[in-house]
Length: 225
Image (tube, rainbow, N blue to C red; front, side, top):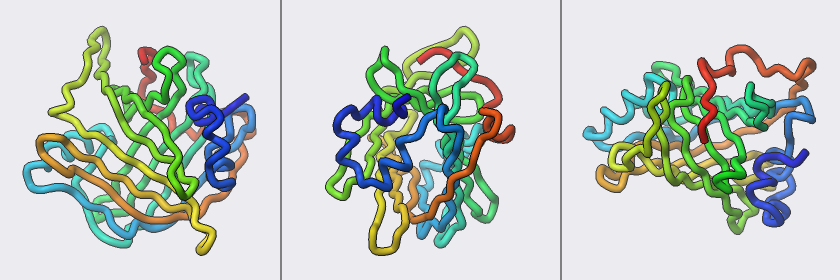
């Protein structure tokens, strides 16, 4: 089974650095996960007017207002099948800021939408289209697009004036043998909202029973894409 990132990129997946191909090329059939540990050299936030966005996001582990330098960081990526049978990859990020924060996301590949769909937060309230590209370093770049809010029977296209557009790039440096990541989230009206830059190393862990760790499971799953 091809990974969701291979499905989204097609032949362009082969342009990624070999270590990036390895990191993003596994699926639920491989029964393993990737654990990254490192340091975010900088975690930043936007101007004072952006704080309401960040505090609201922190309620459901989407964004947060803390900032600083040299912040210990972990990211846990597991590939598994969700209750609807969809190939899913977890993106659970922990930041050891003054008040430790966690950022939850669950990605699938949607044939219907022709791109990755990223379900954000503990309850997968926000479904975000993610468009992939490969940069000159052989890094994987993700840019967010249309966003939809789902809660119970309610579902609507989320106004971008009240949300952020995310640009994420992850690449591998042969010099230091580390993965590097840069994240920038901005709002077209309010400007830069949130982001971080840093590096990490990874290790593979086995999933013996096909079940991801219990603390990574979202509070609810959203079927709608």
